[in-house]
Length: 69
Image 1 (cartoon, one colour):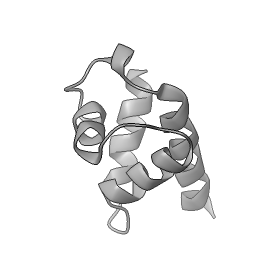
Image 2 (cartoon, rainbow, N blue to C red):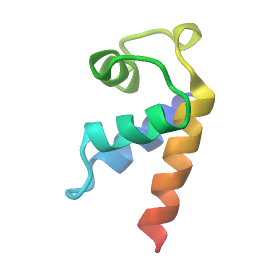
Image 3 (cartoon, rainbow, N blue to C red):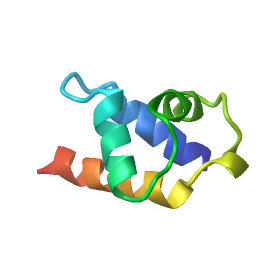
Image 4 (spheres, one colour):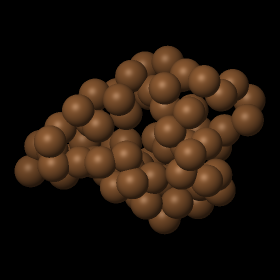
């Protein structure tokens, strides 16, 4: 779990990617939280039990594949 948050933060450090870009992918994969809550979760403020990890994992994987291409 912490690795997924770390990976998301690492992807956000790219100059061409913003939090809203990651949140949109998360939302497109079925995530349900508000962008402010999403930001808090990515930065370890909100608990794991509260969050939809499957949607975040799908979004991170999609962005990771785009970074390789």
